[in-house]
Length: 353
Image (cartoon, rainbow, N blue to C red):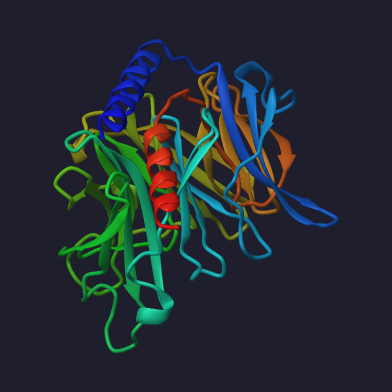
């Protein structure tokens, strides 16, 4: 136990030092390419100025999809990536992976599964709880029972904590529905999704749904006025320059897609939503992939294009092709997180033999 605590302290000290001096020179890019023998997952490290032409290294991720498809990245925090294998939506296999130390920890199956509860839809969020000094994965599950509407019955919510290594159910009174497998943004200790309701009532059709990882409660915040009652093909949350950012995309009758980029300048204050710019006259845009330090915006096209857009010149070009749902780009952070947890799991598995 003493050795375990020392490793936790050392990993935390190393991360704090790295965070204070970190830069965005190295990027981690994940995507799934379409090849003759099927779809192949790639995890590349790139120098910031070399993306996407000259990668430094291709990483070997130990977490593999168990079906003829690919895994997905829920999110990353402090150099740790949360990976999940949806496998037709009901596989529920997940893991935490730190590519810096080539370590991963398998996450046990959750409590709510197809076997235990039947058909469902769900969304995930991942982040760090500074109160308990722990990494958490939250799972919001809506059972597909025709006897009730998603808007009328709260979802089933369970939280996985890395240190305990198990799932536990929590009560909630969430009124909005989080879209299935929707993108989640982690900021200020909370996971953020877009929520909607389909019932005819006075509440806005869309809202920001935030789950605070510390006290484990849901909070609803407003969205920009353009989103209150309108429908979009995709609404992505991300973090832009340290602020919560929202990018709604809408397709018009003539197949062109328009997107707008909004930021919440004062966290938690709905009136502070400010539109930065529009992305107009681009055909077939499906979703936002990432913002880059050089102001470049990366978008996923409906035919598998990774599109680069320059808001200053309104120019765009195609960087590469892959599966439209697989593009993921983030800063690569070196850390020792998972070092003690991976060793602990190894010891437990060995002692159980």
